[in-house]
Length: 209
Image (cartoon, rainbow, N blue to C red; front, side, top):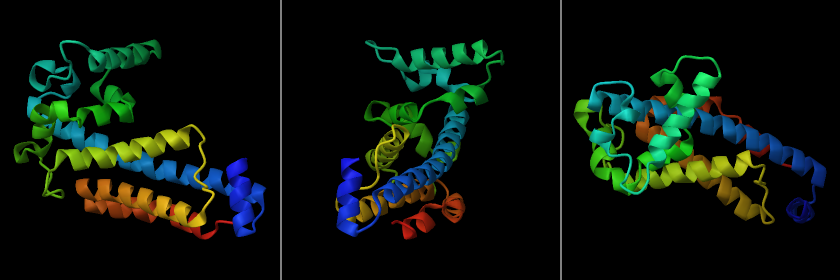
């Protein structure tokens, strides 16, 4: 509670109220992240499926070269997802596999070593392209998605959003919200507007103790 105590003393609010607020805004941010993650995975899945001609594109190592000579980590992660689906008594379908892929997996698909396969397929107009991201710079897009992943991990592990310095906290939240908006807008501006319209974050920030 040390961070909450320092922040509460600096702003003159009740430390328990601040702790409760932190939990609420964390959950609101996770809602926004969930929307952006679904948008991201649908965008990538459609284009990769178009590139190879089948919905289980994640099995097309010959085309996309997911697995290196030293490790088959991506293939192993897909194997585990399919095992879990079968264990739950459900049929394995591309939709279920894609829905169960972690945000870390989507970050991996955006990495530099897949630039000539996955990224090329994502930006290819024949597969749908990236009309809302004209620069098509892979490293920048990956950086924004990694920032979202890191925030999601932080919130999922119940780490605090509250910072000891209020100005630092406000800048941090401004940056994180802008990052989510950037990703969504690079994929689909209308979806970005909808996500923002549904977000509880702005209203909760205004009610910070």
